[in-house]
Amino acid sequence: MSSPKRKPGAVDPESVPKAVVSRLSLYLRELQHLLRDGQATVSSSQLGQLLGFSDAQVRKDLAYFGHFGHPGIGYRCDELVSAIRSILGTDREWTIGMVGTGNLGRALLGYRGFASQGFRIVAAFDEDPARVNQTIEGVDVFPMMRLDEIVRDRAISFGLVAVPAAAAQGVADRLVAAGVTGILNFAPVTLSFPSGVSLVSVDLATELERLSFSVANRGGEKAEEKPDDPPPE
Amino acid sequence: MSSPKRKPGAVDPESVPKAVVSRLSLYLRELQHLLRDGQATVSSSQLGQLLGFSDAQVRKDLAYFGHFGHPGIGYRCDELVSAIRSILGTDREWTIGMVGTGNLGRALLGYRGFASQGFRIVAAFDEDPARVNQTIEGVDVFPMMRLDEIVRDRAISFGLVAVPAAAAQGVADRLVAAGVTGILNFAPVTLSFPSGVSLVSVDLATELERLSFSVANRGGEKAEEKPDDPPPE
DNA sequence: CAGTGTGAACTGTTTCACAGCC
DNA sequence: GGCTGTGAAACAGTTCACACTG
Image (cartoon, rainbow over all chains, first blue to last red; front, side, top):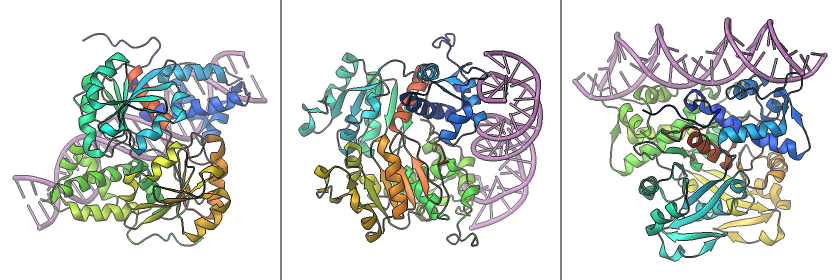
């Protein structure tokens, strides 16, 4: 095997709890807000308070990746933003292909939150001839037939799967074959492929069910925390 | 305070790991697929395999809530579907109000996956006069001004927040004041309110960042698992 | 015999508490 | 004094392994 080649300074991702990565995203979000508000530094306890985490948690999380803080001062917001972006890999632009231009697909094509974090949707695909060869929110929609070609030509790294459940596995297989390195799946099915491609799934009904559970079983209190999905076998 | 009144047979939700609840949703999803395919029973190892979990995990998860299995046989799919729906609280219909009819809001109004799990969107709200007093995907859109009135009249239980980040906290406060018992937040901000209302947040950029992390830090292998969000302070 | 339910062992994550630094 | 980084302790969640059951 080749040596464990990672970008310089990167940490073995296996050794980082998945939950830490998600919190990193949240830290980044808050830091960006703080910067916008003109704040130059934050302490771990401040940052934690904004998100409902303990100060120790914040420090431990960041310490997985290096020494970003300044004792007595805290963290410089701009420094930490850069550091987290570099860790998350969003210090560059990722190109994305969207498969499915139904309700959800169309909405995501116009969603501003992606672009602002460095994700650019550069093509969309649909099986339905009636939806093809148009531009939605500035993104060209191609027939599925051309998926391979476009993924290559436009150097698409990630595929977003927003097709009906029954079609999702087939779409994922085609994306993988075309060479994407990651898939974000919105279809309510468990996807699997041999290996070598990262998968993250979001099932909106599942999120509502989490809410339903916490309301149904003793109406009260707050409940918040994200869930778990299956690894592709 | 009053005694810990819960629906009969319910378990203290505090003692159930949040991850278990999310897996329950996934079990439900698979069981519904199996039923559709005409399968009458499943074993824990079968169900686990479909989702990438161990058989022990499946059994432990279910055992939090009761004895649903039949030794030597496995679980009867239809029984287990009913049991899980009852646990998740989706054995009844929840009424939902959507706030925000931008890209994401509109898409969710038409999303079939909600209705199929017992969630019914019965009203939408928007600040923009141009978007108000129409029907989108069969759902009436009202001005924000009427939120209180409509939430009461239509007995809305949950609010979905699909407005820009800057407006989200204000919207959440109004929903809580109007009496919803749960909020599903899609805006990329941390929401907080005193208490008594459940909150689940989904940040789509965060999901992409999870993917980015796993691809950026050593392109390979599978990666899947859901993350963590903050409790409302 | 195939398959559940579950205590006991284990692994992973969070919290604590404090030494070191600005 | 305020705040980070980090071992060690505490806690939580997962896996193991086996007694028990139809």
